[in-house]
Image (cartoon, rainbow, N blue to C red; front, side, top):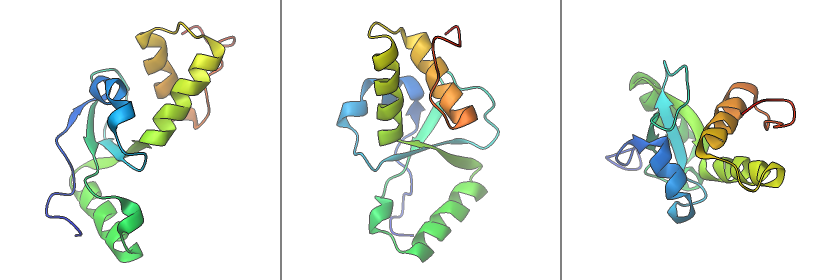
Amino acid sequence: MPTPTPFHEAKSLGYFIEYLAELPRWSWLYITATESDITVDTVCHPMATDSRDMSEEEIEEFEAYAERSGLRSFFYCDQLRDIIENLRLQRSDFTSQQLVTAIDFYWRHDAFIDLSAHAA
């Protein structure tokens, strides 16, 4: 492992949304592998090392460690920024619940939510 602590302190998705501007663009968030519903309280574990500085072997080792720890990758910060920007283009005054719905939608469908087609 490139670092003895592969993850920084776990916090809620709401925390990471609030402090998104302060997080490195490369930062990946992980959630429990059994997570079925994304909410503002979903616990996210931020990766402690920039994967761009890791060898392919180190990345494989990290992913195996995450899996053994019961975690799976969720989003990296730029993806969350893209989801927020897409939502802002559709509705500049979106609510925090609409944002969480958009994040959950993207997580499930690998696509941006269309607010004209989904009540959010």
